[in-house]
Image (cartoon, rainbow, N blue to C red; front, top):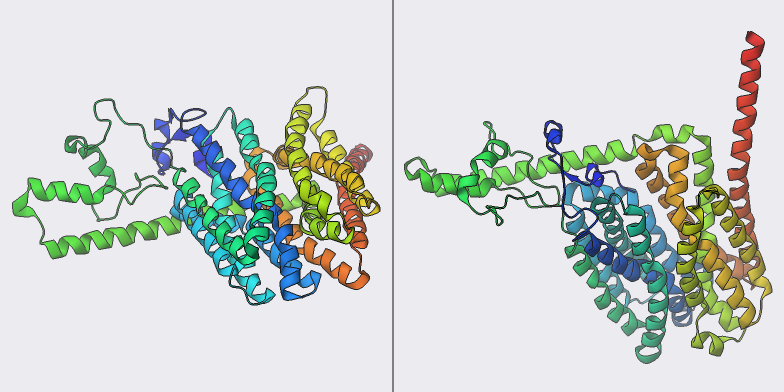
Length: 510
C-alpha cells in the first residue's frame, strides 16, 4: 500500500550514494519483527474489528435519533470508507513524520472521535465526530501497521501479513460482544466513551513501531562515546550549515545539536554566544523539517501520481471496477444484520451467538484455508479467487430468502469463508501489474474498496426506506458484484482475441 525503499529489509542511508553499504539487519524476520506482527494484530482488532461491529451501534442510533435508515447508515459507512480512502494520502504523513508518529497521532484522533461522538445531539453531528474524525484517525493508525510489518519482514512477509490481518476476525467477534454488553449495561453514549478509552491502546501499538535502527559496533553499544562522532560530523553538518541526511526517517532530527555542544566544550574560546547558538539550532531544525517535508511530498507524488501507466492495463481497470462493488457486499451484512434479526424476531437467538460473529470467526479460517489451497502448485490462484467470489455472490443472493436463525447462520458462514479471498488480493494484484507496481496498485484497490464501503450501507438503508425491505438491496448489490466478476472474466478473452487479430494482421502484411 505504500512505497518505501525500506521494505527491502536492509539498513541504508537516504542518499543514493550510500546504497553500496547495504548490510543485513538483525531484526529482519526475527526479534522485534514479531512485535510488529503483534502490534499490527491489535491495530486490526481495534480498528477493523470495531468497524465491523458498528451494526450494534447502528440499531441504537436508529432508536435514539429516529432518522431514516439510509441517513443513519452514513455514520458507519463514512467511518469505514474514510479509513480506506485516505490510505494513499496517509503515505504523505508516513514519508514526512514516520510510521510511529503517524500511528500515535492516529490513535489520539480516533479516540477523540469516539469520545466526542458520545455527546452527539443528532446524526449530522456523528457525521463529523465519528464518520470523519474517527475514520481519519483509523486510517492514520491502520496504514502504518501494514507498512511496518512489510519493513520488518522479507522472507516471511506473507506469513506475517496473514497473521496480523487475522486480527480483523478476532476483533469483529470481540468488539461485537463488548459493544453489545456496554450498550446493555451503560447505554450507547457511555459505551462510545469507554470505547474511546480502549482506542487509546492504538497509541501503545504505535509506540511499538520503532524504526529499523542502524547497527552499532560492539565497543559502543550505547552510541554515547563522543570520540566516535567525527565520522557523523562530516555528514550531519555541511559547510553551508544545512543538515545532512543520516538521520533515520522515523527517528529524531539528528545529532547536530550534540556535535555543536561538543565543539563548544572543546573550543571554548571559539564558541558562539548562547543567543547565536540557539538561533543556529532553530535554523537547523527548520531546515531539517523543510527538507523532510519536501522529501515526503516528492516520494508521495512519485508513488501515487506517477502510476498513470497502471490505467493503461485494462485488466487492472477491470479489477478496480470489481473492487468498487465487491466490498459493499461484504460490509452491508455487518451493518444491517442486527436490524434484520430484529425484524425477523430472532433477537434472543442472535444474542446467544451473533450472526456477525459467525462471519468473523469463519472469515479467519477462510483466509488461512484459501491461502493454503492457492499455494498448491497444481491450482491456479486466479481460479481460487474467482471461485470464492462466486460463492460470496451466491450467498448474497440467498441471504434474503432465509428467515430462520439456522438458515441465516449457514449463509453467514459461507459469506465469512468465501470473503477469505481478501488474503489473496495482494498476490492477484501482483499478477496483474508486476512486483514493481504492487504497492501503488494495491493502494488504488484499497481506495476503491473504501468507496464501496462508503456507499454500500447507505444505499441498502435507502432501499429499505423505499421498499420497507432489505431484500432488494442485497439483490442489487449482488447483481453489480456479478457484473464486476464478469468484467474480470471478459478481459482475458478480449486480450486473446486482440492477440489473435494482431497475429493475423502481421501475417497478412507479410
